Image (tube, rainbow, N blue to C red; front, side, top):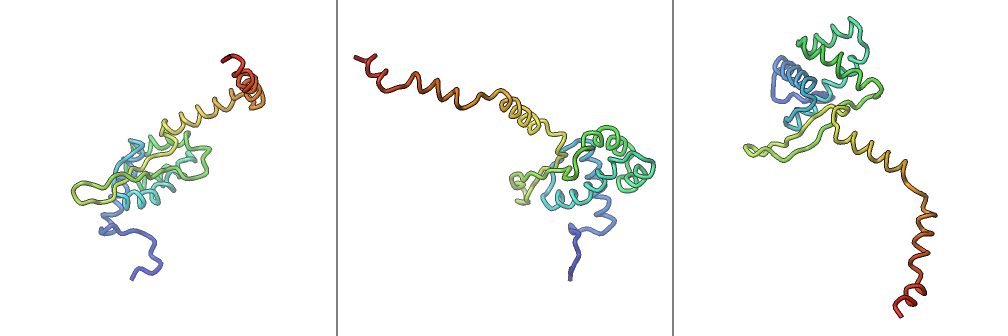
Length: 160
């Protein structure tokens, strides 16, 4: 029975699961986005978010702790040089899981997991929305212009 057991075993032994999560976390940090099954993406989120939080504090101890999980020097250096400055002001929720169409072979639920701050599509929309909000005119002046040109008496007199 699995009473109180919060980890998803993913039908793997502990050593296999640790290696899988380490490799997937390295791929996520290096590529900023990966495609995998939904169950693996959810397990990876629980694995990688504490490492990203640890990456905010660039100290020797935090580098050693992160390296003990990832076992990849390149991924650790990318985490501390590129990823950590972008997520410095975010209080959590560094990853986003987006569900995809089922896999053709076995109809397994697929998902894309990505680092939130590295998706330029969503950040461009937010910036564009902010610019539109700044240039918006008041409704009163717009309503006054419409009222002047579309009075029913003025339209009838022009037609006759």
